[in-house]
Length: 153
Image 1 (tube, rainbow, N blue to C red):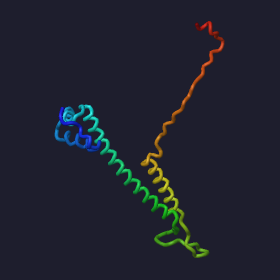
Image 2: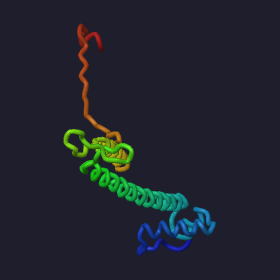
Image 3: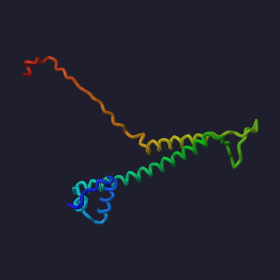
Image 4: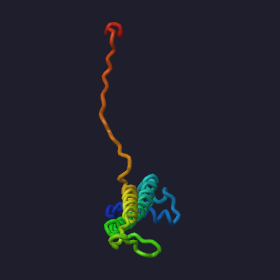
C-alpha cells in the first residue's frame, strides 16, 4: 500500500484530497492504495465530497430564495396596509356628494393574494409542506371461533 492515512486530516480534507487525485486522472484503486484505504472507501469519499458540494449550493440557493420571498411579502404587506384611491382616466374618483376620494380595495386584495402565494412558496422552499412519515406500533389478536385446540393439533 501507499502512504498511511494521516490522522491529522479532517474528513473534509481527506475527501478533498480524494477529489483532487481523481481529477488528476487516478483511479479509485490507485487513490485508495496511495492514501491507505480501499478502492471502495476512495469511491465513497469522492461521492461524499460531491454531495457536500451540491448540498452547499442548494443551501445557498434556498437562502437566497427565502430572502427574495421575504422581501416580496414585506412589500406586499406595505401595499395591503396602505390606502389606495380609486382612479379613472388618470384622475382620483371622488364621491359626488362629499367630494372625498373613494377608496379602492383592489390593490389590497391583490397584495393579499401575493402574500398567500409567497407564503405557500416559502413553505415549499423550506420543506414545511413535505409529507411526514408516521410510525405506529400495532398488534393484532386473532380469535378463531368454533375450533377447539385438539382439532388443531
